[in-house]
Length: 196
Image (tube, one colour):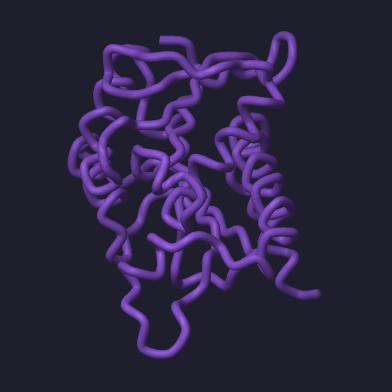
């Protein structure tokens, strides 16, 4: 197993009707990361689309993956990829939407609960541990009494689109920094922004 290999998973649902929704923000951020490392996604036997490249010459290798399954059954593809590439759970980074964080905010953590996020629940179950890294991309709470399940399956509002582009860049930055410098350095960078 190569210690400097990282599996970076962008969560979302398959199909064109979901591509621009809040629930797919993890996959949107993964597209930004793929562009940066000059990698294109192709089919993989793990039931995922995979792209591979290096953060920089001699740096960490990133294996980017978008499960072909629906969000709630992401664990199978992630577990298959971990096995195929020989990656430990602490070298898995999952990018996902987070209702409990305000829109345009990034939070990072390792392990812990799933907070009702079924994609995280399924990955923790499939890996046998919750101790993978998470880039939690804030999408905010739904307005009024809107059902959270409906809210995350809606596209971002036109008023959010400019900020969304920056948010996706930030999420890609966070994933890069986790692989390159570790959790503490990345948390200090992104969590310190709350003080502004």
